[in-house]
Length: 556
Image (cartoon, rainbow, N blue to C red; front, side, top):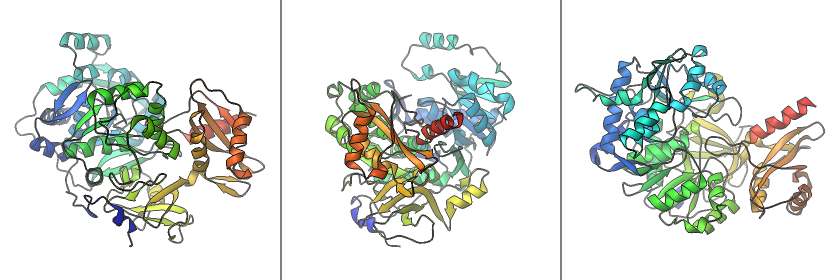
């Protein structure tokens, strides 16, 4: 097929790559052999080397085998970003287990679904979340909980760490509810035996069972193979020009596909140091950039908004950042320009989806950026636009659904063959994203297929209105939602969070929209809020707001 995007690649990026057929944990082990003493993690100033993390992951793998975890067993990770995450992740893969990364902030009700759907008999978490996990053990396959203290990886004296452990309430407990409790630190004390050998799975076997965020409905388990994940790490490395000289700031959660690949696996492949932040806070992130001088980070648009709106942003030095990779939600022109003007950083928009591990397109690292574009397909990724009914391919400039063919394509949805058959057709992954390709091979997303609003028979793309929202000088963040309407089918409602100290009226914003939009696109309702519901990585949840409105209508 014709690939016009090749002409705009950075000269260092090849059109095709060689992907080793190997288990994911080799990303760590191979780099540890090359750079044993290089720092892999930096956590609140404490560094751990590649050799140390590799050794601890070996210990963990041998120990969990001793607990009865066998190849193919699904093990849930309920952990924030800290060195223990990397030890558990690579250690479980060495034991042959399937890693199930989950948001540790999930409610007990949500965990019940995920543990049951995945069939996970083991969870790894921190004491803060151990009770919540145990609460659903009797209703799920969960048998054991391995817990790790964040304090064990902080630059604290041992006596202070011990006090933290004693206050947790789980120090001497052997069980919580019906689940066995196991201290991860105890598992890591014993070196792996001399005859320890990591599992050698087929590279095409499932390695990661990662759940969609549920932003478009019930979460689905996405099966990713070792080969999928290794291939994506190589793609990200090539596109981002990653070398051991770079330093990645990992503020995105590693339990999300975006954080897992861009902030962990690709940097580990490249020999980079990873500065870990357990959660996002705009001021803490600014301080971390100022102090630890990362060269790269990955973010979502709401993170850029929060940083840009820090009242004293000028006092922080962002000059170490060569690039901020931005994805998971549309990056509006206003957000990009405001962030770049205030920090001097370069925001590079890209695109990915968990069904393809994560990032598979982006604007070039060095080359031409097109504002509003998600960029060019990575090496070995084919992309095209098809009509919304799937009947024909569309030429440049015409809107339709983005479909992909990539080495990183998922094995399928776990225990959902019918859903898999809808998503993967004749070797092409149907993304559900509406967009177009220009003559240069740059792709653009105009909206999610499921987010399209139909007002009295007219198609309205929420992103067009979202762009206007962020151009308004009083707005911190906002989003456009289609609400069921008995007369028009749907009506348009906008939710807005104003900048601190600003006031506004609904009529003021309606007038603003009337000046910039044709009448059928003008929102019929504006609601001001102090905050908006977000996913674990900071993506505003359009679906959640729509569900709230539907619930209100049902009560009337």
